Image (cartoon, rainbow, N blue to C red; front, side, top):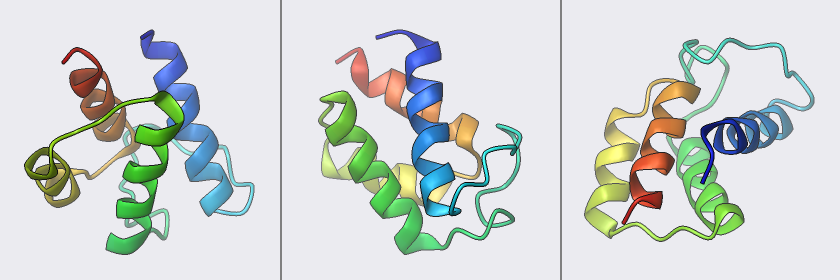
Length: 83
């Protein structure tokens, strides 16, 4: 799995949640973008499905607690893609 493809998928889905806003920085806080915990959880599950990834529940829970930015989400998806 290529990093650029993961980043593009993260941006594409966040942009959909933000109703087309696609000019955000990877290091901008997801909360500052207007996403709440349920949005982030939905984002994680959707991206896992789209990318054909499966994470253990504990990994998803940890990510939900620690994901602060789009960059964090991309790193998490790359990590579970290596399993």
